[in-house]
Length: 501
Image 1 (tube, rainbow, N blue to C red):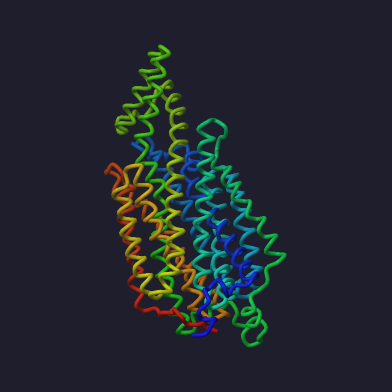
Image 2 (image 1 turned 30 degrees about the vertical axis):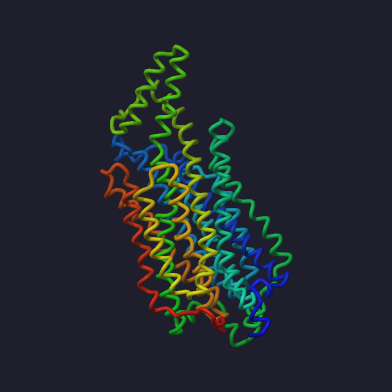
């Protein structure tokens, strides 16, 4: 064995290699910051943008909550559809005009449109902004992984790609901390509409574009391919991707592989903070009313204490809530809901932080595991673990301590799949189709995944007579992770093999 073979992977990295990894990781970190800001801001945004249920639903129990949930699912689907469309377009553009130029465009697009989301006046324009944001978010991933795959030394490539994906967890945790801080500020009465502030924060990554424009160069592999006359006509061609039997097979099977993980994450996993809010709503509300009742009695406000006791009874038995509250009850409930929702925002933040703490180790761990046992066995273990852990969380999650045990395990298992996608897809396609092929797998799957929230809505309707429809819908939807196992035997093992040319 020679000295080079014995060197750890990071010894092969030059200063420029580290710079490229840092820029690509920052782009993906901010990309995921935006995604998670949306996930965490979605409930508050829907409460503000959807004030009344449809006329046909008025008077029905929980009609307003169901209308807000459906609007949130619609916004999620719009975001995923934009993600898919942007991934397809910018993935092709990345092969045609270059990785660095395309990364610059995508970061500017998702940053600026995230800022526009803060200006939404209704569900329609909010969904439009989320669709436009998705265009940039979807394009950045494929371009980023193609850039890192082509620039890094072969020995360092798998670890760098898994590290790139692991930084998505840092972006998600940052979003959770922003949400936590704003939730506390709202509870103290320091801010109103904190979800709008969150989207303004999401516009800041546009500053990264300045660094990309000044210092990032195109990979030599891409530059060589783009200057070869015969090859230039084929750069970023979906026709060639789907016309070549090998690349078509890799693209279509990779698409199914992605659908399992993306639907599982966006239609199930990223609704865990919503589940936590549902689970903890009663406890937080009863605690609030107990303290308010005690305070009113201490101040000899007996009428107010009696009204608060009524509201406390409604929280214990929501079905007893009158269709129309008396004005005194309505005002007290509005004030109580504001404080309770601010407290529940903290629970959502804690849940998100735990998901992504587990995710960071899961994504970096997938890189090490797949280097040891191979890409396909690692995927097999990850899909089974994602199903078991997600179904367990949605079925058993009830108590505060479970956030710190069950949720990180679920995040570890679910998000490890995405490190696998970042590593595996660049190894399936040649240089002239690498960004295009990766985008096809990763983003056509999002068109399918965009329907996931609607399936979730349908399942919640099926289980609406249960006490917690979201819980039963989540367990059922977890089965989607097992779809990935179907196509694994048909895909090639790429561990230890050079990138296709």
